[in-house]
Amino acid sequence: MEYWNLFLGFFRIGVLGYGGGPSMIPLVHAEAVQKYKWMNDEEFTDVLAMGNALPGPIATKMAGYIGYKVKGALGATIAIVAMVIPVLIAMIVLLGLIYKLKDSGIVGGMTHGVQPVIGVMMAVMAYEFFLKSWKSWVKSRTIAWTIIAVVVIGLLDLNPGLLIGFALAYAFIESTYLFKKRKKQQADSPDRGFSA
Amino acid sequence: MTLLYLFWAFFVPNILGYGGGPPIIPLLQAEVVDHFGWMTLEQFGDVLALGNALPSPIATKLAGYIGYQVAGIPGALVALIATIAPTAIAMVILYKFLHLFKNSPQVSAMTQVVRPIVAVLLGILALQFFASAYESAGIWQTAALTAISLIALEKFKIHPGIVVASALVYGAFFLH
Image 1: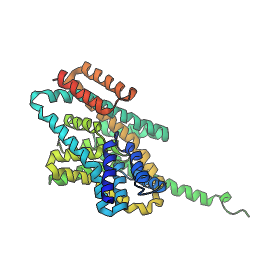
Image 2: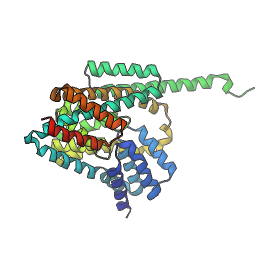
Image 3: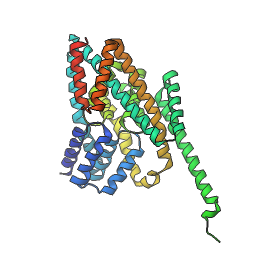
């Protein structure tokens, strides 16, 4: 019965979750906390924080964790399958139908028609990411990393994965160093100790 | 061997993709189009367009579809597993240690540093699609479709599925 509920809950989340991962979070909350009571609000918040701290799509991480919590590895598999597979089949069938018309020359036209639209979607996402960085980070750093990315990927044409891997390692080391330094300063400063 | 390549091509972008779906798109394009040459940029654009028109996370739709195109159902499974399993398993294992890194300065620093890079990557990808549209449909068609879809999506908040479907229909009749 729980297996069936897992399937139903995550099937609904997958089919109704328009706009990608983040838009699915409230749907996951509605199913897992409100409807099936697999967890309370506090745990949901923790799972979300955890999901945000790890790379990869957020929705599948949540499905995996919640499914595992409810019914172990099989539960996790069912939750993920229910969320991912139905939409994937729809996508394969739809693209298959479109490419069936290939010979008529219509598909070429369709591809041309959709390219500016996808360009706009990517540009909008680019703008949103930049804005998020601009608002929540030191401005000079946003500018510096933007320039680095333009030079390394736009001009030198290096693999973007390498740059991101390097940036992640750099951020990890630098923040660890700064954190330790700050802690040490706090420990050293006299007004933090016991007053005589 | 193809299955191993598929696993690698989807594993790497998802591990580096801090911040959910969008960062994965340009990283995946680098692997699938530039590195392994499994599809052209135009085909990748078709898949993205349809992926954006359907619900659920973009990463799993791209993985499943591209994996299926490259190596049938086993290919789809391998690409999906590479996309989902590593981080889902990490989630289950690391949950017990959540308090250790929930508010850690490292996690927020890593989240911050990736954003401007992802913005540039997505921007470059956008330019590539505009350039490709310009080559095949000319400047006026491209400019008009760009302006109309921008207004439809951002100002009037029309559903991306409807915008993509309209562009497909328009292209089918007027752009071949």
